[in-house]
Structure formats: C-alpha cells, structure tokens
Image 1 (cartoon, rainbow, N blue to C red):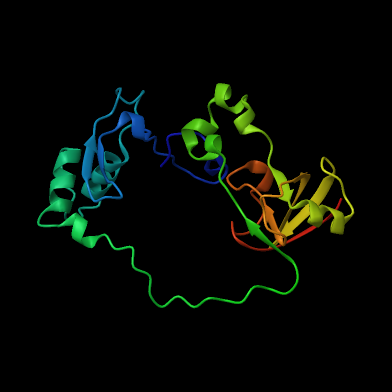
Image 2 (spheres, one colour):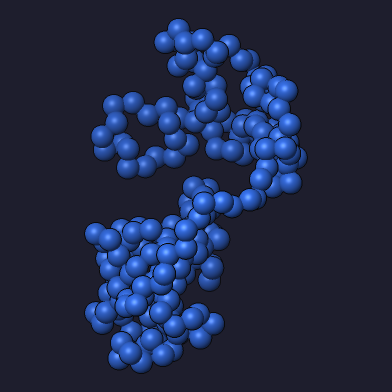
Length: 204
C-alpha cells in the first residue's frame, strides 16, 4: 500500500493506492497526552482510499474478526475505550548501560533535513529547490579536516556499514572533535548505516 509510485513496482504484483494523511481522518496523541483527531482536508484522488479502509476491506475478504468499523472515529473509540492515555506516558529511563567512547575512529551524528522528512515534502519540487534541500555534506570540526589533510569543499569518501557515499566536506567548529555530522533521509546517504555509530571518512 502506498500513496505514491515507488520501487515496489519492480517486484509487486498488486499495489493498493492509499490516501496521504492530508486526505484521511485519524487520531494522534500529543507528547502531553492529548488525544487529538483530525479530518482529511480534501477527498482522496481517484480510487485511493484511507489506509484503514483498505485494511478493513482486506480483513472482511479474509473473514477476520474486528474489521467492522465504518468510520475512523469508530476505530478511535474502540482503541481508546477505557484508556487513560496520559497515565501511559513515561519518560523514565532504566536499564541503560553506557558504553565507553571508542578510542579511534569517528562517530556519526545525523539530522534529517526538513524537506526530506516525509513523502510529501520529498516530492514537492518547489521545496526541493530551496537552500534547505541542498545536498548533504560531511560536517567536521576544523581540526578533523586538518587530520584528514583536506580543505572545506573537497570531496571525501564516507564509509559506514556496507555502504559508502561521496560527499563534500565542510567545517563546523560547533561539533566536538571525533564527530562527523551526515544527514540521513536523503538519496545521497541512503546506503550508509545507522544515524548514530562508527563511521569512516577518507580522502576521495
């Protein structure tokens, strides 16, 4: 199921068109425990339907119990029945074991660019033409650039996990030494590993 054409067309026999969040009703819980519902701004295009409706029909066809809801509100009411949402929110952390920093190598920290955060903004040509949608860079402290023997603007090879990427390097003395900031959620860095972890930067 998807609201957009994507790589699944290469292997899927059937794609079920669903509406993006702007065309469907739903409910979310805010960080302060408020249950907030919303309606679609416009009707879904063509034969697309909200994902919950597609799942409901599939459940009916498979004769699975619990797929009789007619509205998103009915789904919400059943899910929230007798639930004190605020009481379930808990920011306590327990059982976390701190690992010592590695003696060698760089650690990646990643952001997700504002216009790479969801399927809608990634497909907005006007937003992708802005400065905020520029190609990711490998940001390092200037002392790290000196260690690598490169200057800002040069290309470097970034290797993490089984993937690598060629990126322009840039200086950011707001970062601590031993850290490289490489954005996630972008095609240029999609082959890299986790957003946080050991990473290698070398001259291209």
